Image 1 (spheres, protein in one colour):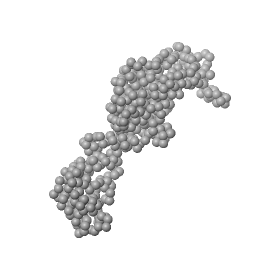
Image 2 (cartoon, rainbow, N blue to C red):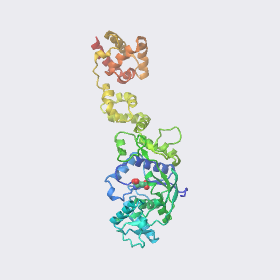
Image 3 (cartoon, rainbow, N blue to C red):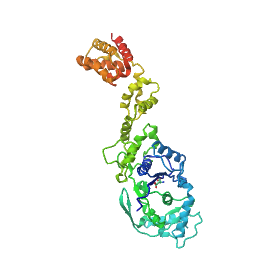
Image 4 (cartoon, protein in one colour):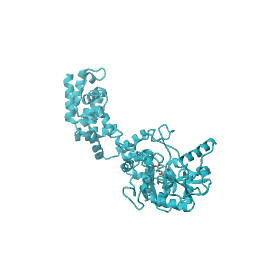
Length: 476
Ligand code: GLU
């Protein structure tokens, strides 16, 4: 097929018809990773030739989504490049040039029929239970194309095709897959079928990575490549992305989210890239938490899966936590501060490991703040009846709290381990529940919370003693 010594050039070629979803970004990621892995070029090309389906703001949204994830293009509409322009709507001259080449070869002709006529051909075929093929109605003599009629490709040879797909292996289709498809529409814009072939040629694209919906049209593309004497790029069909139950293909309509929603929900870009990369690929070893750089280094088309990849948001949460845990304390602290702006910094520093333990995404802090962390800055209201461990008495609770207070007053609280060493021997002698329950409850006002040693460490000497004394006053 194609010349393997050529510099790798890949492209992401979205149509600006709405927001970017998981499937689109996964395609971009694979194309990008393959280009980067091979020191090649990654192109962003906007396929904006279907004006009726265009959605305003899509191009900006596509770029913002890719940028968020660090999928940076080497050539594109905003930065230009050696094959500019990168908006198909600005490349009409190229399409016209190749359309004329085909016309000269006798391989393109203006469609002479009205919509109604074509509809009646279609209806007749349906009535006769035959596949409707435009080429069955090809005019004997071609008219002159004046640019206002649709221009159709004349399939040069009606035959079967067998081709190699790097992921799917050998594929084939019979002659019924070929038809005289439209190259240029009556509005002057090319079809995807035509435009992408010309652009890929002019931009030197070596590998096409795209969704499986294009397999059915591939014989048409192959026939056009032949007509123009073009060596096709390597074809790489990516596996479909399935919903959680693993059967239904994920479509925009049935819940595939706008990728920027994940950003708004607080997901980390690196975790998202990791998640997307594993939707249809793996490095072939034990690793499942990987940075974008590691993904690039390991990326290989031969490891792209054939079968559908299941989108499991639980896995994304897990990955996000793994990436979050690997961040430096400085980064973590900065992120946490955004969600807990009224917490003193020194408290936050001590509280940090406990916060990280409890979340997978930073934004979750907002949901658990009032129950899990608020008592660290607002001294809790304690219900004195709850301080009693099992069938013990208030006096016993008071004795233990007095002793723990004494230990805290003179002890080393510089780490959770030191607090543990300070209080645990006494608790072991007296009964762990008898000592640690009243202590934990006095400090947190909660029946379930972080362990008492960590509480003492985070609250510090002064605050811990203040809270114990408040309870002791009520007890005695
Ligand atoms: N414009 C096509 C789409 O958005 C891209 C297909 C391709 O990558 O060639 O579906």
